Length: 369
Image (cartoon, rainbow, N blue to C red):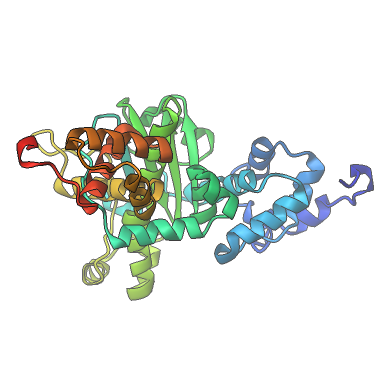
């Protein structure tokens, strides 16, 4: 470690780089109190902060490698730096969100997806090749140490422009309070209904809010579920826009309201304009709307694939399956093995076990139906 007395004063250099987004001084300049956020998250000394600010900003396609190199230079843990930079970038994006949209349709591009505390009927299917591809891509983007530890929050920080925020009690009132403290416009929606997870996505970045009282398996599943919403309901449509109608990105990111022509082009490109919301919407009978149910199922299937990969699940259950046991006992043993091995809650474990046992040829007998 270099003695701080021997280090040059980098404050003038970092000050001169505040307008250059190619360096962290400029990259963090758009974040309200960005320097202080890093000091608080990483417990940096002033000299270490200056060393950090003069480093080049991480490149999106080489985020893990660049952050690891910067972390070594500043002498902080790479995972902590990755998480802090993701939070700073998300706050910078959200700080530019219009605080008073004149109409709901003008709050374009904001995704809000919530995971409530009610018991849910998880899909009893093996998912799809698409979900496995997305989950595999997430794990490929993280360092080997994170893959081995299966640290889902670190995996998000490495693989996606998403930050995880834990609140003591996750309700919309508390989320709005947190946003206000961080100088980010509040949501137009509020309430005191308890949630497990909430995703907000805007201009390519996401904030995943998690209820801090969740136990480890529930927390892991809630984080993975909200990440599924980010990828499936936000990042993929945004990529379609970039590929098929790139000039609509200004509309989707809220730089201008959509015109009638924009709406027609968006319909042809199969991309939504306006507020994308899955905030526990209910129909007149109190049930969830069909598109909300579909989005929730997909996010849960992705979470299962991310936390309990299909091939690894099948390998595990081959050690559990044995002839002569009743199906109900086999399912109970399989679900417990999955819950213990992959640290997921009981309901997702049962869902995963049901699909995996069927894939292995284990089904209820005629007399057990």
